Image 1: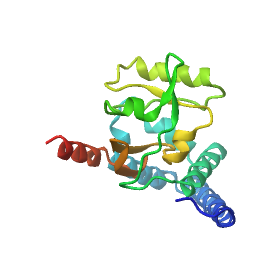
Image 2 (image 1 turned 90 degrees about the vertical axis):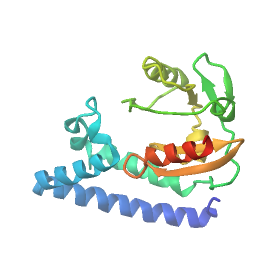
Image 3 (image 1 turned 180 degrees about the horizontal axis):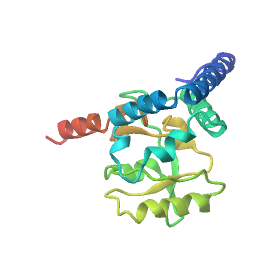
Length: 201
């Protein structure tokens, strides 16, 4: 459940300090020991499968680490995780989402059919719902084997599921059966596969 408001601000301040130190130290190490830092980042990427995607070259993402944009993104993610309300076995939030046709529905409406990602997409932040829908069409062009919907501009689904930048869930009949760790470094799609195989065996 969420933290009391005063406790939340103290936690947010602490996270701000942690992220600032992380970015400053990371930037200094990247300048002083670029090869060592690159090897460490690639090792983490190998562990999570990020380096196995030929369309996701490390030359495109390692230089972005420890930048100002990186700082703000990591801070946003860490702050959002403080307000994570999902619990294993608990009721899954039935947040509003938008189909690519523009029709509004709820997340449970499409999750009944299953969910599977196979490739990452490079999509920038959206300023309005049309940007978000346009980005979703990029995913749709890859013919995913699942329904595609987008969060509303209030980002309620992302907030309630603490899904930024990515997180895997298994939801059945409105209950959370599996809540993965946040990605891209800490999640493991094989855990989802194991849960689904157990469910459907």
